[in-house]
Amino acid sequence: MTLQQINYAITISECGSMNKAAERLGTTQPTLTSAVRELEKEIGTEIFLRTHKGAVPTAEGAEFLKSVSQLYRQYELVCEKYIDRDMKRKFSVSTQHYSFAVSAFIETVKQFDTLEFEFAIRETETLKIIADVGELRSEIGVLYISNFNRKPITKLLEENELVFNELIKCPAYVYMWKGHPLAGKSSIGLAELEPYPCLSFVQEGANAYLFAEEILSENVYPRMIKATDRAAMGELMKGLNGYTLCSGILCEELNGSDYVVVPFREDSDNRNSIMEIGYIRKKHGSLSEIGERYVEELVKSLERNAEDHS
Image (cartoon, rainbow, N blue to C red):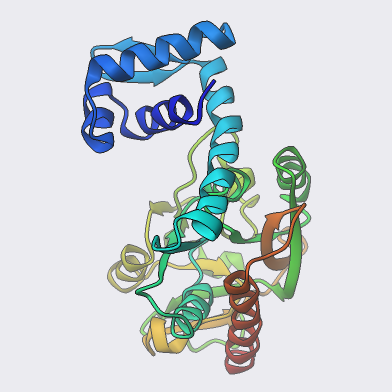
């Protein structure tokens, strides 16, 4: 098994086809096909199914790719540090849709030369955040844990050799635009919210509700609309008087002044809950200089914006 074979297999998986992978790698499809067949023969496992739609990893192939992706990323990191000094060093963050996490990222990037570093931030689904950090696509992931999702998330973190570091605890708030009929209230209960659509970020996979980005996802919401990004969520709030349930931490320089948060009022059937917001990282090893700086900026952003909306 060679690093080149591993790189070929990873690229095929990312591109979804031999042709696209060959184009990205600057080689030919027969070369890729031959390399992958030799690799499959060596490990005794079929990595890809060749279909009319492209190359699709088998179950065993997906597990193999997950393992070697971590290995190959470690190799890239060593090359960046000791060999390819002219290459840009990389720093990536994967996060739930938190404006304070984006604000912290901006402040971190300002402290480094973008000619020397390649930065990336991914606002994505909870399971993808865990996978990104587990497979070293991102150094840090930002998400929350509550009593409702603690068990499944903790299990996934352990499987990926990740550790969760808590930064702040927050009760639930109702997040809506300032023109919403309920925006002026001192607190809001679920019964008052029934006429309005509850907004939620899309989560793929089985038992997706366990990995919801919104707090109190275990409750039943008769009107539900899914979205994939913060911009769409904001337009749905304005256009449909939608709302979502969140930590109450808003970053006004990014969110603007058109949105408000109102404390969620619990009742006997719908209790409030606590969001433990923090970051995940690999259990073994230390954060890079940029990673440490990003965590510092996360703390500052949370403190600044939590005070603004406390």
